[in-house]
Length: 520
Image 1 (spheres, rainbow, N blue to C red):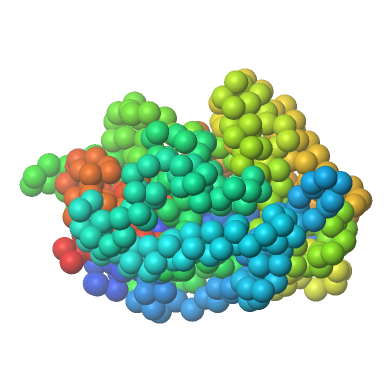
Image 2 (spheres, rainbow, N blue to C red; image 1 turned 120 degrees about the horizontal axis):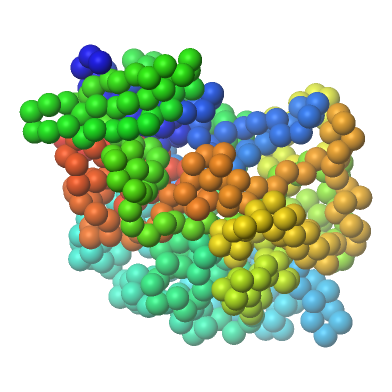
């Protein structure tokens, strides 16, 4: 071992690469150690189907929280494409079939869609008022995520809206939704943003759902979720190039097995296995960890203490020969799949799904939401892919890791059947008839549950946020410190999603850990 580095970063996901870019540009000697044979962590593009040139964003798939400031600071050029259609939600009432379409480019069209569903003007007026409020909160909160961590009182003063603060930060979100909206479908569309990867319900007293909702509506200061052109791998590829340009050393195939935080006088030490399996140790003034906090605790010699995180999602990647026909013949199928396509996500259905999962059963009907990357960006499809082919990403809700215990493969197949069955219920033809096949004649369909994410990416419990999300103010994490990245060991910081302002593809924890090292 030699003390050769100022900073060693454990994990080459996008947050680790952001930290490496900032620290390298500041003149520090930086080493990034990544267990897998490639960089990017969960933010990667891969060819998931044999012999098919389609580069899918295999795990993370949309971008909202990545500040333009970080891209500018690091000289990163990526295109994040805005989706005009926000969402489409099929519905059936009194023998009528329709769909609630939220068109970000045509307010009159959206208002008419609300009117067709609800029979009046009230719900759309409430929708505009509610999202006007969240938009103002986003404008004020989002810039704070790359600033020193505010206190609760400071953030409340910044929000400067007592009603918004109470509804989003203090009281269960369900109270606001039930007071503001009367329609079951409309309530459900709003609630879905509170349940992405989070096992919770509208009236959860822990406010876990509020925290998840907040992170989904503040991104970019607008709440818009954008398509990364070229797939998620284009984002992390550009971040890796920026880190290299700043002088960072990036090593793949190197599994970190221990972290010694060091003492007041001595350096920290990181033990790892290199790509050849040889045991290595390296010293550094700082260690930044891009892994989950319970993984860091294990690396520090503990037992991974604290409550174990739990993921609650099913991810299905597909390639279709063409988009399927809908039962609702009044909407263009490209509009329906151009935003977020909600399936079985009314307010009552989401509550029922939660209760079934608590009782140890897979939800039925199975709630999910779908989006089609290739409608906004066909660059992910190679020249050998037929013109009409489209990708679909399905994200199932309310399927906690506990349901997969004992038989992860069997439950995964049952969960897949559940979400596809619910989707078929709103289609005019079986989805199976539209699936493309790979070079070996198999349907182009890949499914990942919480156990798969733990095995693939070392996400404890398959939790995509590394742990429960925290409100973005001080006091929401152990030894949060000035930047929300502390661990209790002065030389060891969190630079991943487990930081106080972590979660999503944002680069924010990487930026904040770098600022903590640099004393800015």
